[in-house]
Amino acid sequence: MIIPRLVIAGTSSGVGKTTVTLAILAALKARGRQVQPFKAGPDFIDPSHHTAATGRPSRNLDGWLLGKSVNREIFARAAVDADICIVEGMMGLFDGSSPVNEIGSTAELAKQVDAPVLLVIDGSAMARSAAAMVSGYAKFDPALRVAAVLFNRVGSDSHYQLLKAAVEQETDVVAVGYLRPDPAVTIADRHLGLVTAMEQGAGELYVRLAKAAEETVDLGRIEALARSSGEWTVAVLPPVARSQGCTVRIGVAQDPAFCFYYPDNLELLKAEGAELVPFSPMNDRLLPDVDMLYLGGGYPELHGEVLSQNVSMRKAIRQFADQGGAIYAECGGMMYLTQAIRNFEGMSHEMVGLFPAEAVMRRPGLTLGYRTMELSHDCILGAAGTTARGHEFHYSTLVPRGSLDYACTLRDAGGLSKGQDGVSIGNVVGLYTHLHFASQPKIAKSLVSSGRRTSPRLSVSPGGVM
Image (tube, rainbow, N blue to C red; front, side, top):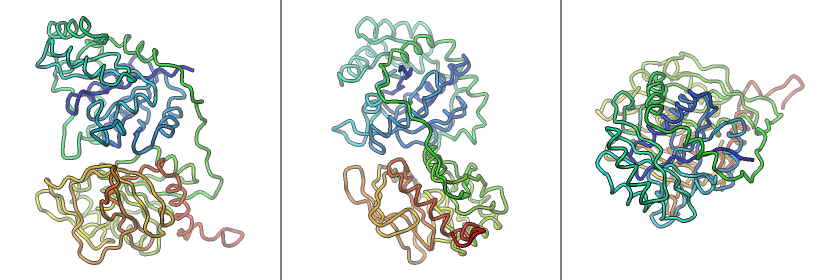
C-alpha cells in the first residue's frame, strides 16, 4: 500500500521548521485532508501544536529512543486512516545523538519510514548560496532523498524567484514556495522551547498560518511529493489490544503546569487495563476517585504560586501517597512532589512535600540528553535490572533537605554514567527522565499492576480477595 508521507527537516535549529510544518499541516487540513502529524525526537511542545492544528494526536518517533521497528509500528498505527502523514524533524537534518553517525537524527528517521525530505532554509540573507547549501544537504547521504526545499523568512516574491532559480538550475531539488516573516504567526519562546498550544489558545494562529501557506506555498506539489513515497512494506497493524483485567483508574495531571505526555505512553497504559482520568493540580480541589496517579512534566515553576495556594490538592496527594497509593511522576511532576520549587527569580513556593528536597531553577544549569534508565531495585516501574530509554531536559536541580533514595541509575547515549534518578518513597517514584514506554512496554504493565495492587478499591472483589 501507499501511505503518502513527507519529512520536513531544517538545515539547523532555528530556521523555522515548526512554523513551516504548522502552516502546511493547517493548510492541508483546511483543504479537507486527514493529516497525521509526527515529531522526530523527544519533544513535547511542537507535537502539542501539531495536535491543535490537525485535530489528531501527534506521535513522537526517534531512532535512538525507539529504533526502526518500533518507529515503523507507531507510524503505521497512526497512519491507518490518514490522507497524508507529515513528520517534523529535529535540529538540523543530520543532527542526532552523535557527531559521527546518524543515530537519532531526522535523516535516519526519514530512511526508516522511507519518506522524501522537504528541506527548510532561512532564505532571508542569501541568493545563489542557497544552491550550494541545498547541493550539500542533498548529496551528503546518497541513501536519503532530499526532494524539495522551502524557504522561510523571505520578504518578497522577487527574492524567492532568485532563490528558486539558483536551486532548480544548479541542483536536482525543486523549490515549492516560501513563507514571509510575519510576527502574527510567531509563537512565543521561553526556557524549554515554544509556549505550549494549551497556553497559546492558538486557533486563530493556525488559520493565519494556513492562509500564509495557501498564498506562497505550492501545496499541490507537496501532496504530490508525499504520494511519491514508496510502497509501505510493513502491514498496517490493528489498534493495541486492551487487557481484560479489572480496570485501574489512573489520575493524569493535565493543565498548563503538567502537560508533557507521549500519547503512546497513555495508550500503552490503556492497553494494560487503565482508564485515564484527567485532573488539574492547579484548579481542582480534590483528587478524582482513582487507583494511582501519573504526574507528567510541564512548567510547574511558572505556576508555583497557584500550585502552592491549592493547599487542599497538595494535602490530597500527600494523603494518597501516605495511604500507600502508587504515584509515577516525571520531571515537573517530580518537582511538584518536593517540599518546594524555587523559581528563576529566587522565590520559593511550597509544594506537596513527599520528597525531602527543593527543586531550584538555574538558568545556566540546563541538563539535556538521551538517557538509558536501569532500575537498581524493585519499584512500581518494575523489577531491578529493567531498562528503558528516555530523555532529560530541565533547568532545575534537586537540593536535598534530607536523605533521598533513588530507584535507578542513568547512562547517556554514549554509555557514560549520568548518576542516579528516580527519587522514591513507598509506592511513589519521581524521575527527571521522561521515559518512552514503547522503549520498554514492561513499564506500562508494571505501573498498571502497581495501581491494581495498591488500590483499596481493587483489593477486594465481591468474591473475595483478587
